[in-house]
Length: 94
Image (cartoon, rainbow, N blue to C red; front, side, top):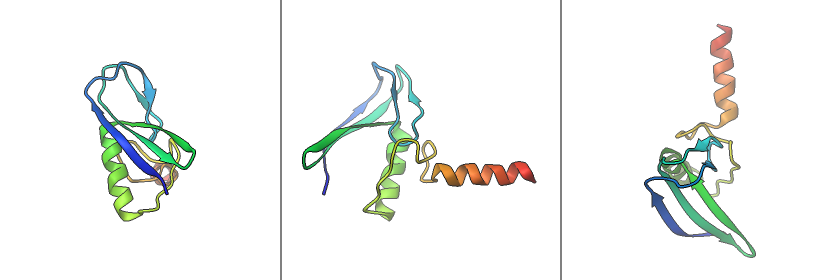
């Protein structure tokens, strides 16, 4: 079971990074949320847009054992990217 720690809210990013939720860029000067995680000998740092961090929390409440990879979700949303692309494709066809 993984453990999270060292949560930080940053008002202005000093480096450009990619969001671990939506995979879009977090530009220099933009706010971000980050935390560290550990699972046995594995671990890392997660960085997200504030709206993506909120979406992750909401999705995690619905699915406590949620596993995801960068780019699986739409920015600031609990909608999975594959569902978003499918819905957009249906709208463009009509």
